[in-house]
Image (cartoon, rainbow, N blue to C red; front, side, top):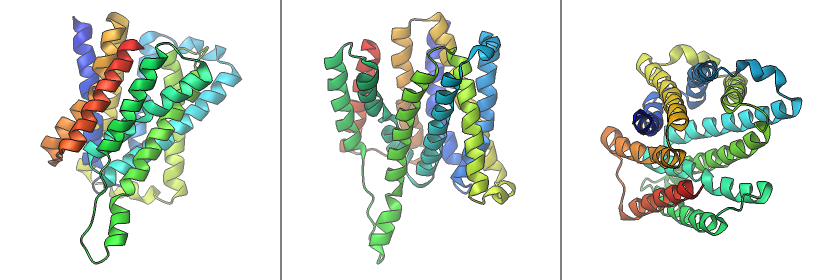
Amino acid sequence: MLWMLAAIGSAIFAGLTSILAKCGIRQTDSDVATAVRTIVVVIFAWLMVWIVGSFQTIYSISPYSLLFLGLSGIATGASWICYFKALSIGDVNKVVPIDKSSTILTVILAIILFGETNHLVVKLACTAVLGLGVFMMIEKKSSTSPNSTEDDKNANEYLVYAILSAVFAAATSILAKYGISDVESNLGTAIRTCFVLVMAWLVVYLRGKGHLLSHMPKNESLFIILSGIATGASWLCYYYAIQNGIVSIVVPIDKLSIIVSIIFSYFVFGERLNKRTFTGLMLMIGATLVMAIFA
């Protein structure tokens, strides 16, 4: 039953990613943190390629597939940049569920573009429940200061970035679907992540933030690197579980990473859920698990 432990490990590491990232961007600029973290993720992505032995197939990738892998990488980079920005100014237990709502847009686009109509009623019902759950998770922060209008705008800025993160994440899945039709999935992920790396560092230098690298607190640099390692470890565990276990069990377990993030956000940052947001979280988890089971 090692595959079951690997599936649980995948969920734990995925859940830890956002917590470690939040710890690493308290003073560090989110764009810089994304760029540094991506280096670690790229290393793990190519490690996966080496493990499965798919590197030799890189020469057979068509220009068409490479184009869509590149576009998918750009979308991934945009999603990560927005996600880290949202984490830097918002609570983990608010940002993560909104980011996970990318499932809603992905399901709708997959039905329209790819004709994925198996269990259509279940998918549409779960998508509606997911939407309701996300709506219940959204809480606008209010301010009582004299400059409340400006303060409210800044306090709720995380919401815009979290939604953009979800939109770009959905675009990633759709574009990747086109791009990996004739590409081994791990190799496709590694190539896509290279595009993310280039984009992340371009953003840093085009925004004139290169000098901030030398001002990163050492403890935050460690957390950022650990965040990248957690992502890579999650990928490795997930791959092992999928290869050796029962997919219909592995996928739902992996989706439970959101619970890990919420639990750790409570103990590490003291973030609490009220009755409304807790109900929204339960709706999201339930709908996600049902869709994973019927996938």
